[in-house]
Length: 213
Image (cartoon, rainbow, N blue to C red; front, side, top):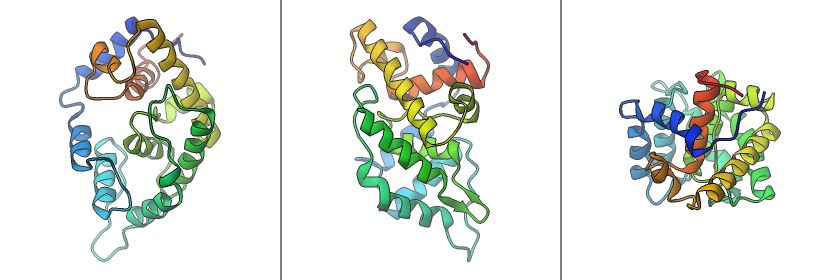
């Protein structure tokens, strides 16, 4: 399946849906405020905040019981040690092919990272975690979006997803004449990135079945 590229008019629908949710951005703004100047998973408190934020977004990653090892904490610390320094920064629109490939590899490793006694982080939580770490660069997904648009949930599919988001972002900036940083407020979703607005578009039109093309 293909999804029609988002235009400001088409985005108005998905933006309206998200703006209609009470406190839709509350936990996100809390996470940002608590991790200033940016998330650093070398820090145990930032790993705990990421765990809590992912669960606020429906990931259901179990917290360790008394006396249990914190599998999520150890796994994300090891992943950050391997990939944190390689994660691209900047807007999704301006990311290079090598940047998106690097994010695909980091995503695949994160999805396979142990997060509890009997689970890995998994594809949806890994995409959301990468968004939390690089909100301007990463357009996350869920299972419905991944399978519908790309037919898979592996690292190569995630790279394709980011490549699609990059093209959408470029078209929006070109058509509006407004840069990435200012465009969310112009569209009516201040306080989140353009990559997140594009994720919301796919969520409404695919996961919620708000329309297809």
